[in-house]
Length: 137
Image 1: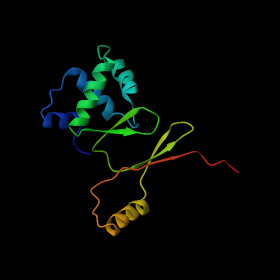
Image 2: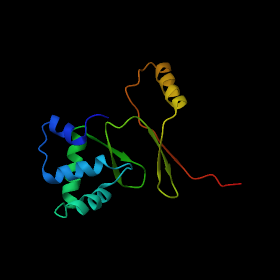
Image 3: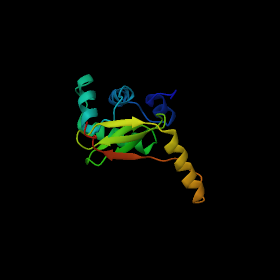
Image 4: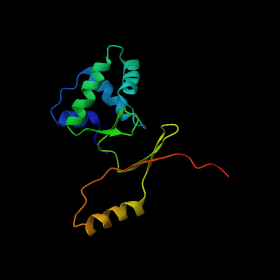
């Protein structure tokens, strides 16, 4: 991922206000999948003038321009992730809400095989698995 969120915003002609820059920086520094309220807490810690409404408007704008992906993990909260992150899938722990990112080449190959069998060429996919931890013996 060579271009930053801010650079992609500029390339798409978005005006980068100070508050948008802070929100973009928070997103770039996130290694999790924050929802709007988490983004608001992090961004407003840097700039107390940022409102929750500003965060909602900004993530919606970034999503509409293809800069962010909206993720839903079944907990009723939209979460956000840089649209240019390397491909990965998600396993959601239903007991804690923890989101585990993973890549599995066998799954990737199987998805390609299924698409070909059905007469398609995959152009992308998103997979979320939901589970609970196995009990330790």
